Image (tube, rainbow over all chains, first blue to last red; front, side, top):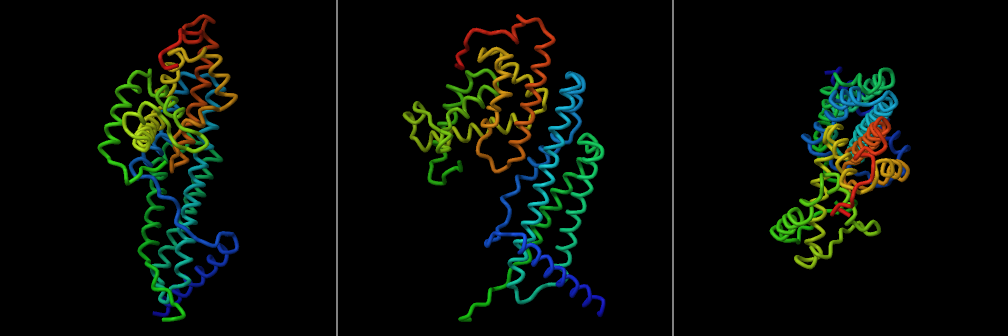
Length: 175
Length: 163
């Protein structure tokens, strides 16, 4: 029981810390959810195209070395853009949730903790993919297409979880 | 441009079919179609303009049909493998729009291909498309450099109906 209370307390403390950090970082007064994530099917198709082997094999077989280097540079840039997008969307989901959670009368520690863990897992996975990109280039991610897809899926789960933690009625002066 | 809920979907479908059958079907390849559809968009207002289609249907219906066709053609091309995009670019050049060297130089300098995507809510897809065109241009340029000067693909062609 004490352990559970400690976990709940820890989750609330981390949320308060994150809220303060994000508030300081953000100059926006209105926190909005990120623009709609493209349909799952199309997103997967896009990731397959970016990280899949087909285009690289084509370039390898039909283009000179300088074009091959151009291709790798371009794909690396796109992969970083995609990572940046995932990070920003995850951050926006958390900002949205925190904006509502701070007005909530009854926080649910376990749900908050789960959301927090999911958020940090996404950040950690983004870091891992970025490290692979830096060290071994975009084609090293060929075998990580599934993990890349998993990152998008995790983001969607985070989005859904944050939506489920419905904000409780806001206390108004009149009520 | 977002679809308007006030428009009659049947009218938009009819306009779209008319556009596909009368105009787009005559163009040589999806890249030519994309260039054509992007050129019907007013870059100051973001609205599509097509006098013939507006005359037969109505301006809002024509706009929506053009926007839908633009999204459709772009979605096909943007998610196509690079070899398809290279083939489309070669086909576009063969249709006589310009000499290969001229087109490659002009597109590389002005990056005109960046205005081809529709106003999409997914910037990553547009980025992938632009990147693929950039690589395709480099491949076409390298291919032309290896071929004789009067190669049909690298030399000028008679003007096509696209023009």
